[in-house]
Structure formats: C-alpha cells, structure tokens
Length: 245
Ligand SMILES: [Zn+2]
Image (cartoon, rainbow, N blue to C red; front, side, top):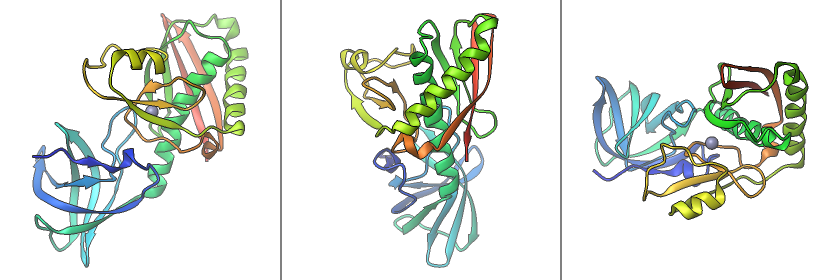
C-alpha cells in the first residue's frame, strides 16, 4: 500500500480538505479508515493526535484517535451515520481548536529551548519534550544550581515573550544529509536514522531541531508563554510551561 500523503506538512492551518477512501480496516481491534492523503496528525513528536469528522453527504465517521504505522495513517473512530467504501471521495474536517492548541504547545516547547540558549544555559542538553495540554514541559540533561532557578525562570520567560513579540516566520524544510543536519541543527538526537530525509523546524534565528509535528506559522500566533516551574536535580532539568489562551 502507498504511504498516506501527509497534508499537514504543507499547511498546519489547513482544517478541511478532500481525500479518497483506500480501505476500511482495524487498528488494534478498533475500526479505522485509511485515506490516500490526510490533514489529520497522528500522535507523535510529543504532540497528541487530531480529532474531527470524515463525511460524505449524510454519512459521518467520527475520528477519535489517529495513529501512524509503516507510512500509513489510521483514522480510528466510529460511524455516526451511514458507511463509507473504498473509492469514496470524502471531506475531512479537523477540530481546529484542538489543532491550534497543539500547534501552540508544540511551538512553545521549541521556544523554551531557544530562550534557554538565549539566557546562556548552553550546558543543558535537550533530552525530551511533552507538549500535551496536561502539563507541557521540556527536559534537559544537566543541572541548574538551586539558588539560580528563580532568576533563570524569570529570565527565560522574558526572553521567550520578547521573541514572541518580535515575531518570527517559522521555517520547515527537509534535509537529506548528515552534513546539512549538522549545519541547520543545534544538536542531533541519537535516534535519527542514517540516510533518511529529515524535517528540520526553525522557530528563531538560523538553526533548529528535527521535528515532524505541527507548529504555528509565526511566533506571534503564540500570544504569551509562562514558565511555570523549573525542577533541577539528579542530572536532569525539567522546565514546565503554559501557553496563555
Ligand atoms: Zn516541533
């Protein structure tokens, strides 16, 4: 089967589109639709999946969960009415509020990273990010001295909000070699496969990080960010943030 074409890479603010039904199948015992292309984001990269509706006239399939496996996007859910068949041309509609929130939370994680560098914390090595609405955070290998935590929390918050105010058109592009990856990325995670196309996302300045998730188009779209807490100890620093809605 051909891999599903991922339309969200082209435009993260595309909330409706048309697509063709390839097959109705099961994903881990749950009813799922496979389409030729999709705007639905499958869970990954620290961001949750999209939800929404797939419809054709009065037939409606409610998408509760979206997963990605071996190049195929599984739209998992249930029919509210009717049924679909292979070859049907359907309309896709995302829960746009959910998508926008996830774009903001995902970008917020990148932005915290930029602000951490901006305030001079270059010894912290990015380890992982959690960009769900429930307590988003970024984690680093490395520690901050306890007596500096509060000062740095406030500095990181100011630096991040200054970047939002200034604004930045977020750049996403594909790199094809390790040399390019080194040129455009701050650090290269160990799980990056060799010889594969990698998508790089830059939210500020010239360099970014490899990421396949959805982001806002301009930093200004974030509104405001709050650094809630910095927890540092046992070789790990966790920075929790919040996007003001
Ligand atoms: Zn990202």
